[in-house]
Length: 412
Image 1: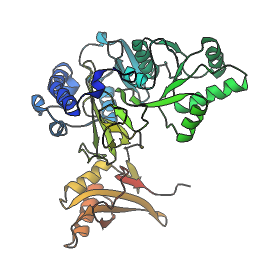
Image 2 (image 1 turned 30 degrees about the vertical axis):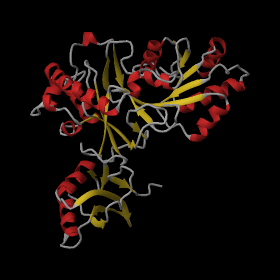
Image 3 (image 1 turned 90 degrees about the vertical axis):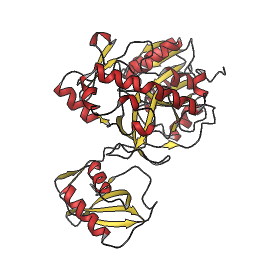
Image 4 (image 1 turned 60 degrees about the vertical axis):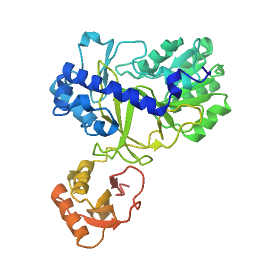
């Protein structure tokens, strides 16, 4: 096994990986429905034993975070989605919302070890972890993965920068995990105080954008920085490798990109909302919509890992927008599209006409005439209760940015 390879599964044949995942999926679905009333209600009416490929998976309903939050309010703490007993959880967390999350048993319950390994972390490293350990699972997600690799962790948490700088000089950690910008704050404070911060040689960052200029600055200081995409609900979904060419999807996750406001998968390379299914038997997430935009990067990583790659975080998918005092939701635009088979894709632009809000729905279609624009405008009015113009554009004429609703009003 090469030094940059966590295990052999990272280089398995993609078709074999797909076959293995979907061979395991029906049992997970049936377990979830049998052990948790939330999933039983959410998946009712579906033949779970027949969900053996992506097409069948796409027919299951998406679960969105606001829905989970509402269910948790109705049936605290987990909305009925815990597939077992609370006694089976190692910890319980409270993320903003609030959203309640249990920690599954096991040494690496959020599957972060693989991302850490790809960033160069190895047994014996001392890891300086500045993610929060307070209420939320952030700090523990990377903490547990590092420990499973045989690393030692300093749980620095957030704040107290001067104290942290002192700890770096004394403990001499080899690795850092935290947000992309905080590492610079730490290094700059250490420089200003004349502290020795040179022990840090590798980092894995998440929770914000790692801008190219910032990565370049870290590299000029001798620090190699990788990124991972993680959420409190799911753990580490994808991670950057030494190729620095997209993020490789973690093993034991099924990732889909869907059109915002729907559960409909988009074509490879098209921007859409990231939807994830994990194999957490205590707290399974099935077609869980993250609310984040991304796209699939075609082909395989030059590093040799064979799993699907994501382009990383590309914005938020929740484009619910208030127009003339009423909310317009991406799901409503999906209703308009579904009512007109001639339409392949649509995008609603919200602008200002003088002192009034205005809407223009641009639709990709090869059909023209026969009153199509007028019929679509009537459907738009029926669905949203708002009047809007309709513009017909040729296939491929809309931007590939995942936006179903673009709020173009100037709030300045």
